[in-house]
Every structure is written in structure tokens, then in C-alpha cells.
Image 1 (tube, one colour):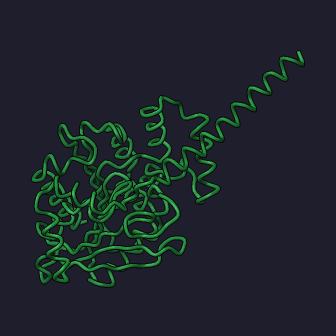
Image 2 (cartoon, helix red, strand yellow):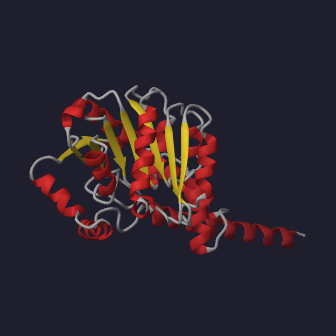
Image 3 (cartoon, one colour):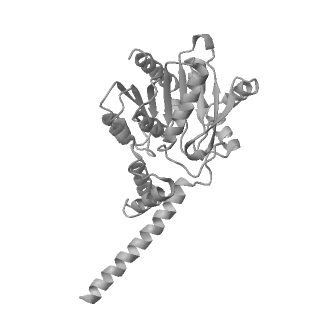
Length: 318
């Protein structure tokens, strides 16, 4: 009997140690990627290949001073970078849009949405590089949880510039999760009146559990549990608390949910979980036919634009 108990204890200890090591590896793998929006040439080339002419459009406006660089001190005292520009017709601006990029991206990667808001919908635009991304400083990827505080800071900066009483926060992928996580915070400024989530995950736990199963064929326990503990110790937050669903339950402002029908990176099923979690206030859902992850605008630019336009027009009346 003693031998059996000793053997079980050794197995349990071995599993615990293995889980701890695997958890530490996963935390580093997920939150300290080698490329984190710092391959500017590669991101410019990728964005140009998807939307021909958009880099020239941006460069011309940046060189002429329409787009300007800015910075602020974000969560943890790190310097964060962003760009901003007034609407194409400033005298008739419809409001301000804060556009939030995804995991390992930067302000260049969603210039398509920046151009949509500025040139087509006539919004002022503010586009931050999130913590540890692009030209911003930081310790590690925050997966939207602490990023939501920084997006709020950029929203306050934008309001100081343009004094608009209507602001929309629009995020894609991790930026979508950031948007949803922000939407449930208390004491949000009254001028942040609408949100657009494009293919954001329901929680960091759900997303990493899917990644573990899809890429490594592993169950969440014990690796994810250990990685979450490591993250909590290092960065001050855990995977389960970083939840879009929990924040959406507190959101009472209008929100448009967008997701690709064929998204297998952030599975499409997650958008239904997000949509159902928001029980207060106005909401809409659009599933982009046939689209994979973060490709809804690329596949359906006109429909995407019109869904956003119609949603914002409704939101302004609420």
C-alpha cells in the first residue's frame, strides 16, 4: 500500500512539474511572440497586397501632415504610440472612431478600416498601437484585458482634440475582444456611445483552449491552468478574468457584432456566445458569408461598410 501511495505521489508530482513547465512555456509562447507588430515592412507589404494602393494613400496623407503621430503613457507607465487624422470633411464630421488592431498587429494592419471611417463615413480617426505592439512599449501582449484601459486613454485624447459627443470603438480579433472588454467598464465617458466587435474571442481562456486543442492537440488542464497562474504572477491578470462575456453582461450601449462564417481561428461559435451575453441595450449581429478570420471586410467591403453605417446611424438616435 505504501509503495502504491508513493508511486501515485511521484506520478502526481511529475504531472505537476510537467504542467508547470508547459504552462510557463505556453505563457511565453502566447504573450511574448517574436514578432509583435514590429515587422513594419512586412506589415506594410501584407496590407498593400490585400488593399492595393492603401499604403500610398496613407503615406501621402502622413507626409502632408493629415495623419499625425502621437503618444501617451499607458497602463504600467509605458509609452504608447498612435496615429490620428481628422475626417475627410472636418466641418461635417460624423464623430470619432477609435480603431483597435489585433494580436501581433499594429496601426498599419487595418488601414482599410481607417480609410473606411475617414474617407467613406467621414469620421475623425484615432488608431493606437497596443501595449507591446508596433511602436509602443510594453512587457508582453495583454490580450485586451489591460489594453482596454489604454484604449480608453486614447479615446480621452481623441475627445480632447475633436470634442465630439459621438465616439465608436471598433476592434478586430484581439482588438474586438479589447472593445468588448472595454464596453462593460464602469464610468465610461458618455461620448463613447457605440462599439463594433469584429471576430473577437469570448475570453482569453476560451481562445487559448482552442489554440491548445487545434495546434497541439492538448486539453486545457493542466497546461492552461498553469499558464494562467504564471500570467497572473507576472502581469497581474488571469485567463478566465479576461472575459469578453463577463464584460458584455454589463454593457448597455449599442454594439454591432461581426464574424466570418468560416472563421476557425476564433471559431464562429464564439460570436454567438458574445452576442447572447449582451442582454442590455441595442445589439446587431452580422455573419459574413464564407469569410475566414478577420477577412469579413476584405471579402465584403460594401456590405461591411453599409452594416457599420446603418448601425451607427441607429446608435446615434439612442
